[in-house]
Image (tube, rainbow, N blue to C red; front, side):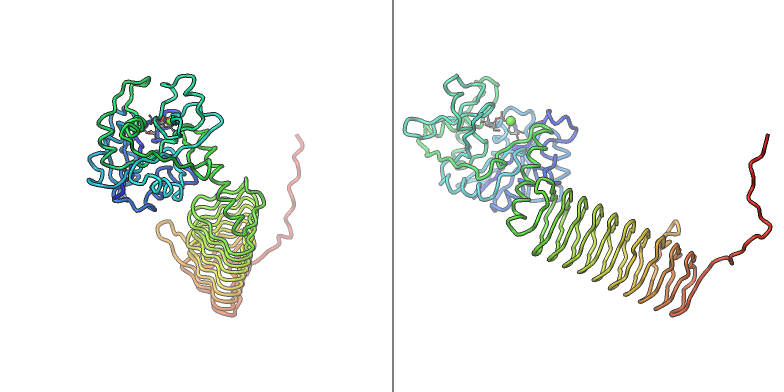
Length: 455
Ligand code: UD1
Ligand code: CA
């Protein structure tokens, strides 16, 4: 039986924020959520989050995750005290307990699997060797190399401080033994806290085998205590995500200027230029090109499509060989068939655009069903909102919408119809005819341009 306890009661004072630290994000997702996803991959029987500061906000953020149990730690008297608050909820009987820190969000499943394997019913610590171990608990070993204790920096003498192997904080212990040891620790130390790390000395006295495992990546054990550490960890994680894309064959103009806040699945020979942000679930087909500074959120983009610079694509489904932008905005509910062209300063919302149709300049297409081979001229606007309700515009195949046309919905443009430039369409336009609403052009023969008055 596996228990996982995540310590998240700390205040996070150095973040200078009203939000509890563990709800601050890495790659668009609260740190605690990263850990919960990792924790669930280990199939725990109990998943317990120890909360204290900001617990109302944390519980609200996790309200739709009913598998999580909470333990309240108020006041916070140390990491050992924190785990003690979860003791009652640990799965009774045999098994292990894995302790994670809510502000160390990027530990990987494989590392924790190795830690669980190394615990072997006893105790295992995730440790690492640092050139600058300042601030960390030091791993003390005897002459034969067995771990005998962890000493916190503030309690360590000069000799112990020179030890470079440090405690990352993550550990696995046999649950019954952990409960026993926690009952024996005290707060007689430099910080007056109940240290979880004191169980190591007790385990060594009980002749329990203490094994150590090292993380694969440096970011796995990096904690976030400040905005600066958050930004640093964000970039390390983005570098890792970029590395994974490059390894999978995606061409990135600059892996340092690439951000994924969700999942990005790419086909073959995709090219992504600098400064793009991918959010939510994004799927790019083969040979897709994303030019600089695009934001793409929850979208699917088909083979050979090019998204030109500075375009926004959100909740859109885009076909193959489509051209978008530069400076285009596809809003939720946009569906573009193959070979559609959407040019600069065109906004599309909740609309389906058929095969090969084009809106190349300055248009708003909202709540519309546009057929195939339609040409939407510059300055065209669907007037979809009457101030109370939204209405649909239907434009059938091969229609030609002249520039600066307003389509006052609900309205339908028939197959092959042409609308003259400047038309305000308030009734359906019949197929294959020219429809135009325009006051007749006049020229005033007697008119003269005013001249400047002399004073
Ligand atoms: C702890 C370890 C130290 C290790 C370091 C790694 C102890 C005594 N020391 O030190 O060996 O090198 O982490 O970063 O365990 N927390 C609570 N309740 C508390 C205290 C802490 O939930 O009463 C949570 C914090 O929110 C945080 C985590 O536990 O997520 C670690 O607490 P922190 O105070 O940062 O521990 P350190 O003193 O850095
Ligand atoms: Ca700390």
